[in-house]
Image (cartoon, rainbow, N blue to C red; front, side, top):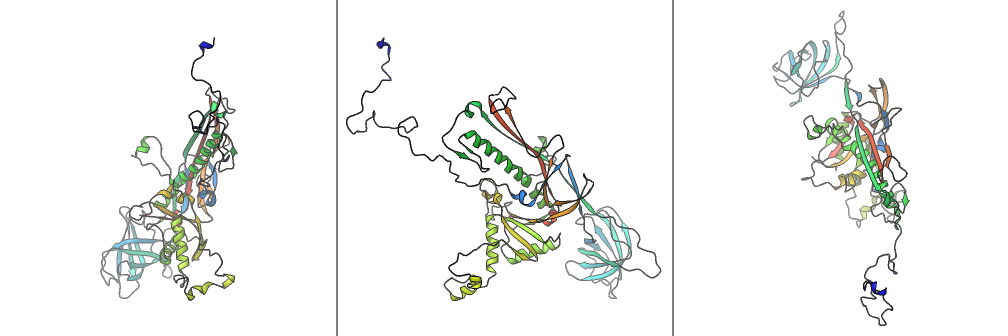
Length: 482
C-alpha cells in the first residue's frame, strides 16, 4: 500500500550537518506558523493622536428637540430709522427739498419717517449736511418706496446740489403749540428666518465568520474602547466618523438651489453656519487680520452690529500665529535682537527670569470687546479644511477662522409661540415622545446578537435628523480668503 503514497510533498529525516544556507534549512517566510516568531507590540500605535475633529458646537452651542420639518424664529430689526442712497432735485441753497427713498439697499417697502420728525441729512461724497423737519411723506411702493418733503433749519438752505448718495436718519421731532399729536405709528420690525433639518445616515457591516476571528493586535479607539477584535475597531471608527459628520455638516451644509442638480435628486439641503454668516454676517476677505488696525476695522464693524461684549475666535494655526505675533509686537522692544541689552526690558518683572521657558502664545485680548482665542481642529486637520490652500492667489474660499459671540440671546420662537433664551448657535433635532432622531443606532442581521434577518452579518446603522440655527448672524465674523 505504501506505493500509493505520492513522492511529493516528502519528508526530511535530518537537518544539514553543515552551517550553510541551504534551501532545506533556511527560513524564508517569517509567518506565525514557523518556529521563529518576531517580537511584536500587542497594542496598535496611535500615530495620529486623537483623530476626531468634533468639539466646536459642544463648546458654543446646545441641542434641543423639534417636532417640525421647519424651524422658524424672529430676530429684532433696528430700533431707529435711517435711509441711504436717497436723491433730490433741489438745488444748492433751497429752503425746502423732496427726497426719494429707493428700495435698493434699504430693504423696505414703505417709508417709516413721519411728519413732524426732525432729520439729519448728509451728502455722502462731500460730507456736507443739513438738519430739517419733515413736512410731508408720500408712499409710492415701487422701486422708489416713497418721498420725504423737508424744510431746512439753516438760513443758507440746502448745503449741496441736486445729487444722489444722500443719507437721512431721524433724531427727534418738533411740533407747534396747540397742535395734534404724531400722525401714524410704527410697528416693530422683525425679520423672520427659518431652517430645515437634514437626515444623515451611515452603516457598518461585518460578516459572522469574521466576528468569530480573534486577532493578535490590541486595537483602541478614541472613545476608550479596546479589544483584540478588528471589527470592534472598525465599528467604533464608523461611529466616531459619523459623530464628526454630525458637526461638520452643520458647519458646511448649504441649501439646494431650485434648479440645481441636488434639488433634482430630491434633497433640499440646509443652511449651515458658514453659509449663513457669508450671507447675513460679516466676512473678512483677506485671509487673516495681522495688525491692530485690521482688528480695529473688525471692532468698528461690530459696533455697528450687536456689540456683543464677549467673543470667541476659533482659529486655524495661521490665524492663531498672526494674533500671537500681533500682540507680541505691541512691545516696542520685541523686534530687537536677544543679544542687545534693551531686549531685557520685560525680564525681571514678576520673577520672569531669562532662563525661564517663554510662553509665546496668547489666550485672548481686550480692545473694546473681549476676544478669546481657541484653536479649531477642523480648520487644521489635513483631511478636512486644514488641507486646503492658504496661498492668497489660490486660496479663494479657504476659511481661517470664525468669530462667535458668547452667551445667548432672546428670540421669539414661532413654534413655541413665546420668547425664549437661545445660544447664538444651537442644533435642533427631530424628536417626539414616540421617535427621537437626535442620534439613532440599531443592529440588523443574524450575527452579534441580532436576529432580524437571515443575513449572516451584523449591520450597525446610524441616523440623525438635525439642523443648526445661527441666531444674530450679524454678530459673527467669518475669516477667509476671497
